Image (tube, rainbow, N blue to C red; front, side):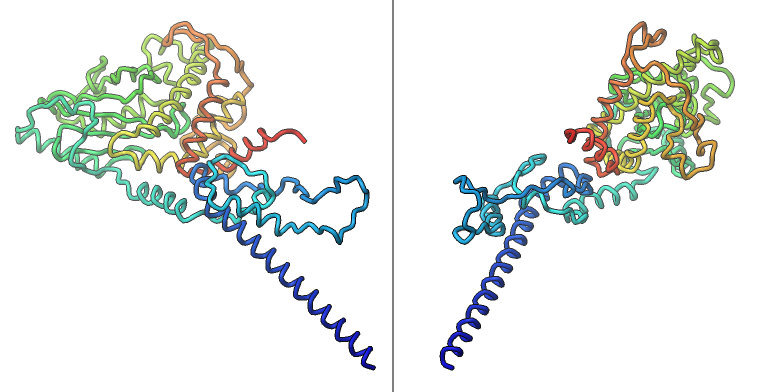
Length: 449
């Protein structure tokens, strides 16, 4: 009887011991997993997500997981498991300890399983959310017409004129009231209290044109003889000539400004012409669907086979320059317009990138992109001047371009691919919806199985 009781007591003790060991092992494994997840979140999440905010939606856990087990190096075949039992939790804990204070740079992927197997929670970090909210709030609060104290980078900042005439000041204030009341949604204006003669405008490129979704900036000065003479206007070209009427030196060629010949209502009328009329004319008459024919020497070739062919090629170059202008504005936004630039391209970044892909496939510049047309009735959306039906693909290699650009050969698709990558990076930094394009890029860069 005593022997049976002793045996039972030993068995019970053994069960309690096994249960305690199993409990400790589970707790240890849980601590390891929690520690590794916390370590990763504290050391790498901020830097990785701030570098590329939208990468967080990728599912990196789909990759095949590796098994980390100890092999029998002695060549004995079946080893004695009682001599050594591999504890994966303990192994991961040791790895986590080594990476405790290590700040991994963006783009560096660790090769240990506890880093590779982390599943994305889909929740942005506090700093990222604050960054995105800041851009959104400032963009929504950005007024179409507003005043500042002064301009430091205005083209006419160093050209001081006499602004003491009372009649002149009253006319400028009248112009301000017209702009504040009647500006279209696609034009923004900023004026300076200390320099009433200075004005800066941002014009959004119209849809259906090679300028769509772009931002184009103009500096204006009301001359001392205003309104007897029209204002002076300078275009921020970045050294690019993307229109026959917009020179790379900043000159704006428009009859209303007296920089080109015109007749009747095309010319400046001190009693009727306004600054609003100038801005709307630039948007409607200069940034149009076929700018090639803005050049008087080529206007007569409109609706001819040769003229239309040259216009198509001109639009390709124009769109390339428009993309370069976007990069120029993103990297060096004009004073007092940084919030507009960041918010605008964050909102329209996806549309611009989709258009780039659409055009690289051979579609006409300015034609409706299928993604934008899905929710609309057939025939295209408002402002779209081209059909959504894909035209025959044209030669995407070397093209001969004559006329305004002289005789040169360009490579549209390779140049646009390069600009696409640059825009993707810049838009991603601003928090635009670039998920689709980043996923496509990731799949393309993954090695074949």
